[in-house]
Amino acid sequence: MTTSEQPFQFVSASYLTRVENYAAENIAELNAGLAEAGDATVFYHTFHTLRQHHFLTEGFSNDFAQWVLASLNQPALAERLASIDIRDYLSIQELRSDIRRILGEFCEERPTEATNRAFEPFYFCEAVEVVIPLHWDARTLPGFRAGLERLSHASFYHHFISSRVRLQLRTNDFSHWFRTALGMESLAARTDRIDVYTNTLDTARHELIELVDGEIGA
Amino acid sequence: MIVSVETQTATLDRYVPLLGAAEVDELRTLAEPLEGSTVDMVNSTAVGGGVAELLSRILPLMRELGLDTRWHVMEGNGNFFDITKAFHNALHGGAYVGGERGFEVFRQLNRVNRDRILLDGRFVVIHDPQPAPFIESRPALKSGHWFWRCHIDLSRPNPAVWSFLEPWVHRYDGAIFSSPAFARQLPLPQYLFYPSIDPLADKNIELEPEFVERVLELFSIDSKRPILTQISRFDRLKDPVGVIRAYRLVKRYFDCQLVLAGGSASDDPEGSGVLEEVRNEAGNDADIHILELPAASPLEVNALQRASTIVIQKSLREGFGLTVAEALWKKKPVVAAAVGGIPLQVIHKHTGLLAHSVEGTAYQIRFLLAHPHIGRRLAEQGHEHVRENFLITGNLRRYLTLFLHHIGG
Image 1: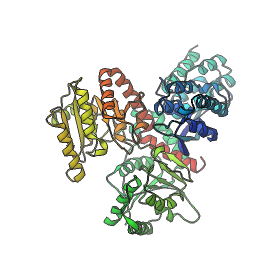
Image 2: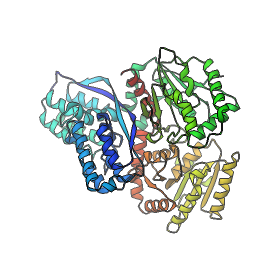
Image 3: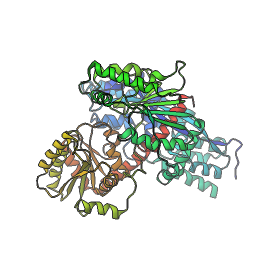
Image 4: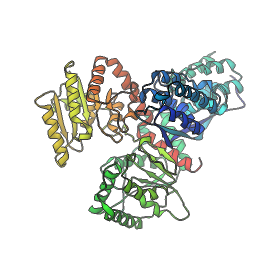
């Protein structure tokens, strides 16, 4: 069994929602608000909302798409926004830029509809993250598997999803450790392919455990 | 005088079967850096009302985690509570009827209360507008971290009352609201804490099917036919008459029953009037069950929700509307109005169905009765939504995270 000199440090992550002092009443205001919003705000409405709604595996992608659909009845724009896959982005700046490009194109093509008032305003929020190291780490796959089972949803999300922004890589903490500390490229690649949109956090974790079990049993 | 309230004991271990050991263990981990910290909570009533209920259940859990919590309740005379009631209505957007005299009573009673207690906790949480001026008690060196937890909807406050309170609010380290829509533009961090339900409270615990059946028999409700239920007090803003009209539209196609259950209206003149209107609207329809429940009937409410085929919350205006979370926790399909905090709980077509009219409500109910498998999926997802966002343990985690964030954790 491979033992790593560099342990995997599990952490407990916990999140607060901070409400900003501005809201958007229409699509043009949403676009303008996004230009001014901090990275933590863009993160909240894309990455964080995926954690809050991880049990929805059909048709829920981010807050922007949900608002455009539910409060403005603009299914085509909602579909474009929903197609944004956070796994494609290495930075919040790139993510923000693509969302604004889609909104900007809509505003240009349909200026009247872009200023139609929404049924409910869009309230800009940001995520505040607090991270505390847990009392266990892992140097081997069996140890890792045991630690994985002891993570809350929020902490699993921290390692598996929000880590992308922190690492600035198209990967996650788990794959990164498999790859760099254990030299297990194949396991890392298969872990990267676990779909965060069609899985709940529980089923994603289950898939990962199955992959790890496969390696342990191999 | 201010009284300190003794809270009941509870154990986190009892939540493990509902949440999993990992979620509960991490609460303990998050609390470790806070061990021994004093937490002062101040509100205006020890019993009755959602805030008192929440504090009575969450403070024992904080204690179990090693925080030294203290609950202080303001005491005032009838004048004070008349004024705070006037404030409450005005902050919800109504007219303010207390005048300058009301402001003076408010200031005076707050001074008296502040003089009787020293709030020296590492963390101080002041609940709602009544004790907002307690921030005056904060030592000059700004020791401790002070938060104002506003449980009410401040989206359209009466300007006179809000401008009276606002200077105190500005002095806190943070304000906490139940919905982004309820917040104000403030020069301090504003946090979102959803209201929560306790899955171990009588209103939400699992019940034996035999008990549920007995409750239905007690009220002569047929368990074999679909049951549509709205649980709420008899108040026009809950639109019970609109619910009956929606039921009638459904009844053309489905042989169903309607249960409207709420607290007794005997000591509430307005409630009595609404109840009369509801009875008139129901007429002689034996399938409409109008139930006036005694105040302390949590098990009966629980049983009625669990027996329901669909739970309705067709309010015209709403605070947060936690009856929706209660129904979702019980894995019931919900059709509700898109008002107040309801859209936070019912994500349309994901965790329930929203409607904006009598006809829309009827349509969504018919849709769910015709497609029960869709109702089951919405209800399952609704249950997960509540587990993730609207349980008391989530509230506890938010408090721990707030405290850690403010001490630089």
